[in-house]
Length: 144
Image (tube, rainbow, N blue to C red):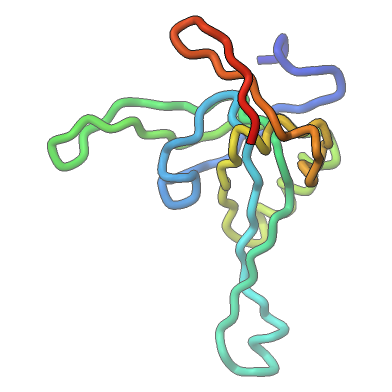
């Protein structure tokens, strides 16, 4: 794993389940947003009603690995992943470590067009308008 990490980056793993990891469709080299869901205790004190907040804490991060095993559910073979390893810079790794203590972490799978953004936070960038697609060994460029 250390051999594929760019200089200055860290690999950090987190637990995922079908409900927190895009239903098992996240694969290595996909890009994801990391979403934190937690209780808003201050709002609960003032209103007396349970309230939750969801916020994206990391955007457009690369998935390095998913531990996938083949299991059986309702007589069907399914791929099950329990841990995702993502690539973060040191400050992002600290943000994720702290967020784990605050609530539930989920991964939101990004479109392949979004993951090609050159901006580290995955902001809207006009350079995302095209992509190279390889089908049956033939490369073609498509645009949105």
